[in-house]
Amino acid sequence: MNRIRRLRTLCREALAALREWRRHVRAVEELRARNPGANVATGVVLLGNGRNVSLGPGTLVEAGAVLDLQLGGSIDLGGGAQIRRGAVLAPWGGFIRMGKDCSVNSYSIVYGHGGFTAGDFVRIAAHCVAIPANHGIAALDVPICKQPVTQKGIRLGSDIWIGAGATLLDGIQIGNGAVVAAGAVVTHDVEAGTIVGGVPARELRRR
Image (cartoon, rainbow, N blue to C red; front, side, top):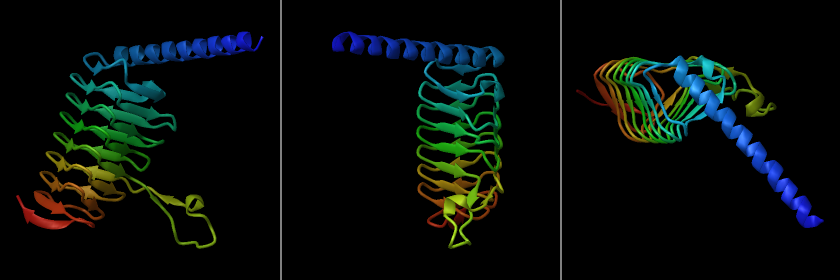
């Protein structure tokens, strides 16, 4: 009897997994239908409402990339965007908007709760994090996770290169043609045509 119960349990689990896979495939097919000309792999991880995703012609979203809309919000990518395997776009009730020919490379995370905007030809290398929000820490008698969150947003211009492992924090603006060196932590605005690096990031030179 124990073997029969285990077999029944395995069958139920297999059927549940099959139903979830079919739901996922239908959601990806609907995403493709709403965005003709975009190349969305079947292995994309699509969480939440895919109707709030807009992909321009020629956009590539590789298998293993994550579009996480479980907490609401929207994702809007211009034509020719490339979202690589392992990259995560998570608007968290806000928005992520990127222009044409932008890329988010493997294992980078772009949040959007305070709003993330990028112009055209922006390159975000692997293992970067963009966080357009910040926890309050003023009250010592309240857990940090319970304190108010500020959401100023992150705004990037066009023709920008964000090097591998860089971190972009809430409230910053990065001007056109700027370069952020690998591993930098950007806490203040970056002027157009400037190369910055370090923790916190500072100007290294002009292009």
